[in-house]
Amino acid sequence: MADNQQLGVLKALDVAKTQLYHFTAIVIAGMGFFTDAYDLFCISLVTKLLGRIYYHKNGAAKPGTLPPEVAAAVNGVALCGTLMGQLFFGWLGDKLGRKKVYGITLIMMVVCSVASGLSFGNSPKGVMTTLCFFRFWLGVGIGGDYPLSATIMSEYANKKTRGAFIAAVFAMQGFGIMAGGIVALIFSSIFDHQFPSPIYSVDPVGSTVPQADYLWRIILMVGALPAGMTYYWRMKMPETARYTALVAKNIKQATQDMSKVLQVDLEAEEEVAERVAQNPRLNYGLFSKEFLRRHGLHLLGTTSTWFLLDIAFYSQNLFQKDIFSAIGWIPGAATMNAIHEVYKIGRAQTLIALCSTVPGYWFTVAFIDIMGRFAIQLMGFFFMTVFMFAIAFPYDHWIKPDNRIGFVIIYSLTFFFANFGPNATTFVVPAEIFPARLRSTCHGISAAAGKAGAIVGAFGFLYAAQSKDKTKTDAGYPPGIGVKNSLIMLGVVNFVGMLMTFLVPESKGKSLEELSGENVNDETASSGVSTSGRN
Image (cartoon, rainbow, N blue to C red):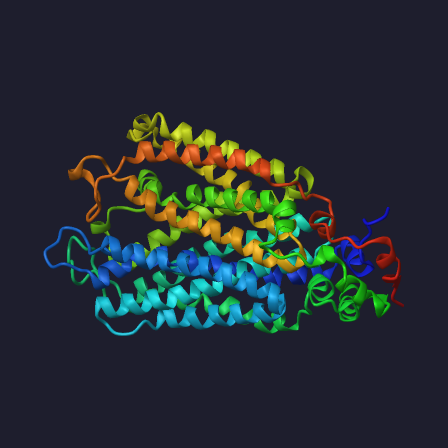
């Protein structure tokens, strides 16, 4: 048994039965993720409205739209901020502690959500510049929430249901996306009732009422509410025992904190802290040969799979407009007024979240501790590859009106298996397999690789998917390789993701210390912690 025992306070967490504090942690961390998803995805609900308000052209047959470079900035600046936040706050979470940094990211999200809706001026340049500025910093706050929420939930959970708990936090993203659509539905209905207006083809100017300028601002600002509501509870959470014991080297404080949380008596001898501090296993750095030997391939696996997954996941923008028009969810822009268009887009996003996004996430929650992370990720990438090729090769067949329902079904299955697959597991695994003092940093690096893939997927493929024929490209875009070739490339991306999954270890049913090699030796453990039920 030498050299494989675990500190008693950490073992107590691993074997603890599912209790109220587990669900409290899921709600507190999950509401952060709910807000993250709402804030990231709500911009897609209002970009059409922004185009109508600020880029209207007199005499044009269609409503105004954001120019390509402005649309890219408005949609992409939050992704860039998220990437930066994941790296910075991931590192800071290992330096200062999860709890301290957790509050900072939440405050940034609340302030910047409100500020996004207060974007200054009424000129297109002024509004778009300030909107992009605040959404960048909103993205930084959201980015910090990724590694911190995952790490906190991982370090609080027991080993039997840890995967389901972390996946449940991530699954709140689905509810956040759905909430964005519902908020858009509610407020657009109110505005449409209070300020009726003709459709664009009847009255191009009158179809966008002046009050519509308040609608997009309200939708963006509502994102501050769920984050603000959980701030008090976030600050009441004690620091995780794994950070306090293994990083801060304060085992006495860790046992006191967890005694209150677990409702059991935990006792630690003072000399344990010194023995743990002197353990060479707990002292190698991120850029050391020892880290490279132990976790180099693991980090390559988590970063590459998340990068490849997000290329495919965020590229759904390529053919979402085809989906919406195929099943009649969104009519032609000229046949609606500005507010009604927001309603139609909100309805489409809500239905997609309800029918595809949310079920996929919760399938992962249900099966991740039964099937394991590896099997779900491999299966997800496999079916994403199959369905993407099934769309791509006979693409000319699918775009015929009679065949579009089949196209919708295969499209939905592709993203169901993204969510019941690598979109969830790439979030879970980096929070489990790295040492406590580098866990938040490595999760941040993995997540940032994912956001780099999201930027490639959302914008690189948007340009690539343009028609080879100059006369058929979207306004302002150069010719590309076409949708069919782009989809074939995405199928290849998914296949490579399936191969890279073999670099990621299975973490089901193992303690975090067993996975990261942080178990202490017999001498240290035997001096450690004893547990007894509290009277």
